[in-house]
Length: 241
Image 1: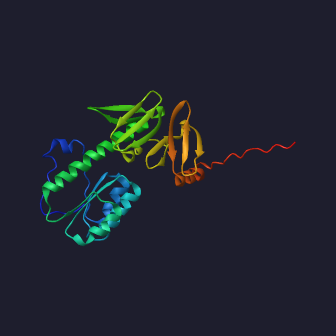
Image 2: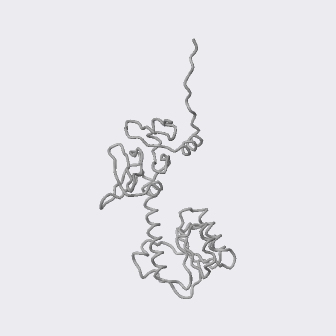
Image 3: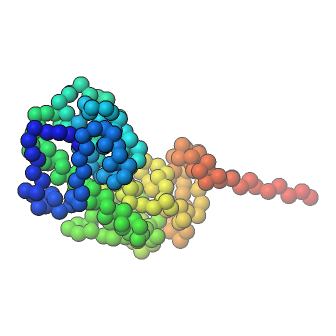
């Protein structure tokens, strides 16, 4: 969304353009915001010094509407770099443009967008893609009991067996549905599988239906869970004579 001295040729790379369906251009911040609201682009290439609206404010609008949008600033002003961090841009490229860097950036965010689309589709049909050896496992979300991080590995406990992978919990969490809850920095649990949560003073132990392994919940997460699900603690009944 900038006017450059020169031409950026995207059609020279078939691998890159195979993921790009539409390219929109805007000369002002207002035009950019109109396109963002109407078309929901997944990648924004933004200058900062626009004729009407600051490009960072345009990016804020885009992120508020779609938190997954990739923002790349291309500008002649280094002084805005710190302020731009508010919208977590993937890159901040200064003019004159280093086209090798620009190409690498666009290639990366384009592939990330394609992966996000695939993950959303798999999430919709209840599948979790997990790297395994030289291939990918597609686990049924309904079969997952809980997921835990153990050192450099992640262990996914399912009804059938446990699988190990190197994916971080944060990456897996984005592909899970609303039945899953991050109970601890090292645990994600399927709330439909939870049978009991027990207070162990320093932490909370989670037991599951027909599964012997345990997960653990931090105190802060437990308080949030109580409020979110409006959990009432069962008190022991007192029986009179």
